[in-house]
Length: 113
Image (cartoon, helix red, strand yellow):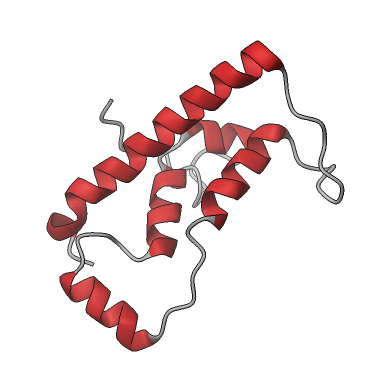
């Protein structure tokens, strides 16, 4: 993946996730957490927020499609978009109790805003 090619969209993905987290925190502070969903009782509302975020990026793509996207698209492949944004999110690490230095909670995170 060409980081220079995807930089602007990587920043936008991180910023968009941070804004969505902030909006959800305000919602929960005002309205309280939603009732537990059947079958998802073991997840907190913040964990479900991140699961829903990741779910919107699910896709099936052929190797040819991914190769073309990596060469020409200003976006990273969806899986990388999800992993990159979540790895940079202290809120994600807190919600899922990811140890510092683990793959989903690296010590060095990218924070722009």
